[in-house]
Length: 201
Length: 201
Length: 201
Image 1 (cartoon, chains in turn brown, blue, orange):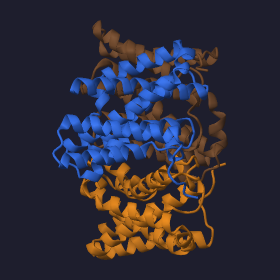
Image 2 (cartoon, chains in turn green, cyan, yellow):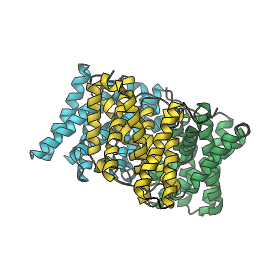
Image 3 (cartoon, chains in turn cyan, purple, red):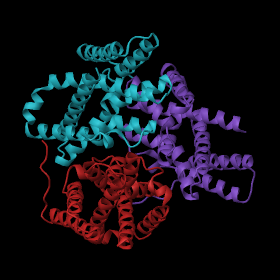
Image 4 (cartoon, one colour):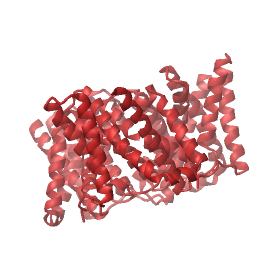
């Protein structure tokens, strides 16, 4: 189980980094800009979570394999950009898996520190979505997830269900799989049927 | 006294969150965007202060009632938006009370850690103004307080006067009331008479 | 040696603060905006580094002389703006010295904490460049260093060479001087011959 989660965490990191490079490419940044955007998209959410929780130093300072995965993702995207862009659907799928895994792992890290349920849900959600928010801010866009589609909402629901099932003594493994599936399903359905949150106008 | 400060702190949080939702509404964000902007406007300043001072975890992770107040503010504004917008003058008044209270409370939290006077003034000011700065950045505006009106300056003056009066052994209660009043007065007068800082051009 | 580094650190801080004020002036901010931009440009990079490494409180909270240098830089630029702008070449030169010194000092601070080489290089580079990145974000520009010229890349190379030479037991003094010179040289040459990184398009 932990092995699977660990693999999915790495795949999520890889795909998030690619999304940073693609954003860099759209904005005609140079190679350093691409590296930085890839980096911040992949580890930005977890970094903010660690800072807010007072976990120091932040995760990628301790576990440097994240950094090598990001460098790999930037190199691959730079060298084979055309091919990577063609994989749009695959990227979208793994991005969705990524937010599911990031949410539940982030939730876990918060729970270890004995925070209240609402804070744990926030930390799970932040882990999944803030990297993308910082990426968008850096290239001068209003963050996508503030405007379109169900994204953070899927994370909030998944994280909340996790806490609920935990209270009913559902086993850890079943709970992790179930809630990650819930996040992925909500996200996929909302994109397919273009369901969004109500606007505030 | 502490009871009053505590109440004003909550009211300030409530009004700051509303200002985040109003900004979300101007930028046609969705409900999650509104929630996030409300959250960051209300607790952003105090969060940065805690991080800079090394107070971990940050305040709303420990004291979760801030979060419920923010959710309440977002819900109220979303449901009764028209009525809330009509209260512009009331909101402006409590926003002004809010920056006064946030400044002096933030100053206090820094002083407990035995920092130098200039750092304490900065921390008080940051507590009051950085939430709004992050809000503006997130919706792609150059922060309002960098361009118009006396805002941060009122906080800087109020915090400085606090330190001065403290040195003259003015009692804590008198000092808090006096300096919050000073901040409120400077802000109200500057808005009424459209007094701003000199531009750098 | 430490005396020289310390002086260069202060000069770098001074010049970085001036670049913040100049950016404020281009964007027609007021005096507080100028002060804030000067502050964030000068200490932003080191602040983020300290937060990520878990060094608390951040450096300028402990060593407040940075703050007085920033205030001085803002005052001088505000009062003698025309003269300061005429010194463009001098400012550019000291900015370049600044990134060299900031990189190696930041690298050092990371190494003390026994982080891995790649993290140390990142922390050195962040110390030098993130202040400017935050400055650009605050005035709503896509950060300059993501688009033009060799800037962060010079820091990355200089920091990497430092680690390499250290492994070959080159003395600390020689190593510091050599790698700062390398950073300065790369930067100056790249600007003179308009050499940039490849774009990602």
